[in-house]
Length: 55
Image (tube, one colour):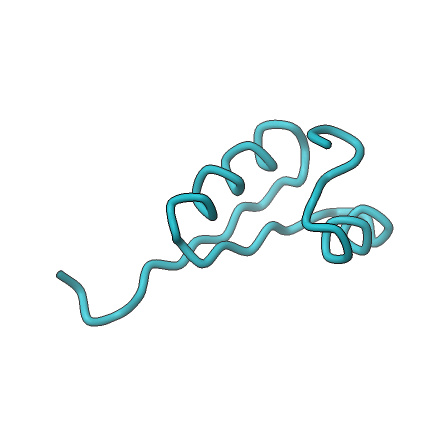
C-alpha cells in the first residue's frame, strides 16, 4: 500500500467527466474536477452537483 493517499484530477466537466469524478469521489479518492467555463465551476463548487449534466 502506498504511503500517499489516492488523488485524481478529471479534465472535463461534461457528462462523462462528471460521472468519472463522481465515481472516484464515491470511492473515497480525493478528486478535482476541472471545468472550462467559470460559471460551471462556480455552480459545481457551490452545490457539489453539475446542474448542466447530472443533477
